[in-house]
Structure formats: C-alpha cells, structure tokens
Length: 162
Ligand SMILES: [Fe+2]
Ligand SMILES: [Fe+2]
Image (cartoon, rainbow, N blue to C red; front, top):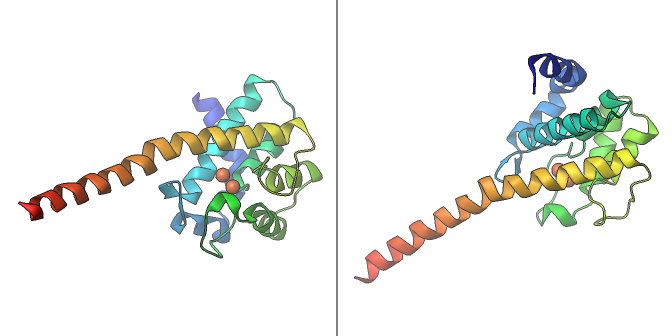
C-alpha cells in the first residue's frame, strides 16, 4: 500500500481503533493471532479490493470489514459454527452508526455458513476477503504452531522410550 493510501486507510478506521471495546479484541485468539489483527487484515484486504474494483462507498465497506468479527468469546466451540456474526452486529450497532449495507456485510460474512445471506456485492466481497485472509492466517500461524507442538511432543516421546 502506498503511503497516501495508508494515510487514507488510517483515517477511515481511526475512531474504531480508538474504541476501548474494540481494542479488547487484541486479547482474543483468532486463527493463531489476535482477533484485532485478523480484523485489520480483512479490512486492509477489503480496502485494497475496493480500490482495484473502483467501488464507491470504500470507507463504509472498509469500516464494516473491520467490524465483521467484533465480539468477545462467549462460548467454546468452533468459531465458524457459532452465531458470532449476530454478536458482532449487535456490538457494532451499539458502538457505531451503521447503514443497512454495513449491517448486512457484518451479519452475512460467514456465508454460506450461518443464517444470513449477502444481499449486495459489497457483502460478497467482504465474505471473500475474510475467507482468503483466514486461509492465509491458518496456514501461516495456526498449522505451523500445531505441527511444531506435535513435533516437540514426538521428539520427547521418542526420547523417553529410549
Ligand atoms: Fe467471523
Ligand atoms: Fe473473520
């Protein structure tokens, strides 16, 4: 991203990144990193895609992308199969003013999983950005971590056997 685009991106998301409740996502684990970092990755990817596709409403779409996983863990279980898009929408509505497009982006971002369907191209775009980023993060941070732990366990196990 150029410095000019970086400055514009920071202006778009500034107030969200200053919100105490949103900052709390820094302490939530998500794909082997923090949920704050994951949300920023998705927002940046969305911003980049909006530029490439010459979409209007870039600020609104990018802000909704940043807020798409705005929730604290309420229950155990696989993140993909909780109704966390509803929790994120509830929190985002409480803290920020959202238009109907932004609300649909957040609530439908797990499509085809979950009850909400994207009703505009912007929602499909953020859902795609989220899946792309999530796949990258899982491969980069989560799988190597688990493989590393497994390897250490195997080495120790073999050492004990000898
Ligand atoms: Fe999500
Ligand atoms: Fe996500």
